[in-house]
Image (cartoon, protein in one colour):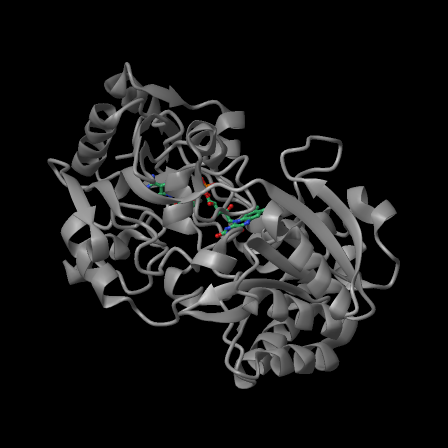
Length: 447
Ligand code: FAD
């Protein structure tokens, strides 16, 4: 028989529930519309009820209740994911975790926090003590730490520390299972991996233990280059310059940079740019390197300085696409990896092959101890067939694509079924009620 959602809300009281249309719509969506493919598929998705537990006890009560009635539950943090990760494909309940926002402790460079804490608020606590996140997504001001661990991959700082799945970047987590009697599991070290980038399909993360980095006084710098090849070569050289402390190395050709409206008065029309964040003491060495490589510094600011230009990181990672989308809703993007000893050649080949159809945007990163670059190229979208033609060309030319046009976990970055993740789900969500529809390998018959 159909579920009476008013009765569900009454049963769960005093846990806060939202059932008004505006809240249901807002909390059922993320940034899925970056992708025209996902936009078509997911625009009608909606939950029936939003439940906002204020602590672990309320969360456990909600999960036990939903388990008993077989109600699907989709966890949600800031709702800034790009692939519909936090969208309730089978309806049911969206579990809004924003009230689990306590900063628990900080000791010897390790922070223990609740999962719904926003990244910016985490650093509000840690920075006065001289510590910051090792890396953060460019959505630092809106995303939660739990959503980042469950749905993200890397970001500002990955040029030094790699991504979320690099060993040691998440020390521990506390996760609640979806069972008749939900359990709170404490996972440490390698045990955390099945829950990292699992889209909340195998447990609700309630606490995280994160290793931090010593904070620096940072400088934001933009260097201009005549072409994308020069800017990419500079990006590589900067990442190989071991004496320069850097937190962000982003390269955009003019086709992508032209959308950075607040920066335009500083940029040279037609030129490629490198957007960099480096530690203050590294500034002289940075200037020497950029001059030697034919660059011209066109913008420089103390990162702590507030003016009417947003933080430089809000022009990088997936924010680059957002600036383009603000100007032209037909644009979308890709996520590919340029790595290996010839990765700069791969970039050059992709640029030569697709030109202005895929304006180039590179995020330099550290990957398994080496320098590599993620290509977050913009795409002037024509249709799905052409999009996949470009994706197939990249893959055939040694540039694996983490498809941002699918909500299926395995079809995104991983490509293969993660057996550990699947085995973990059998244990933590035997009925398959958590964020259903996202994990391809899952079918209730597996339980
Ligand atoms: P949500 O979108 O709310 O959730 C993400 C996923 O995690 C969902 O599957 C959800 O079900 C699950 N989830 C949320 N909380 C929990 C929990 N406590 N327990 C279990 N599962 C949970 N990503 C990057 O990696 N790097 C970037 O630099 C980056 N830049 C971005 C820029 C823009 C403009 C946008 C729109 C997105 C960007 N993203 C980036 C994607 C996204 O912002 C990040 O991954 C972000 O950290 C997600 O956090 P959130 O709190 O918004 O998570």
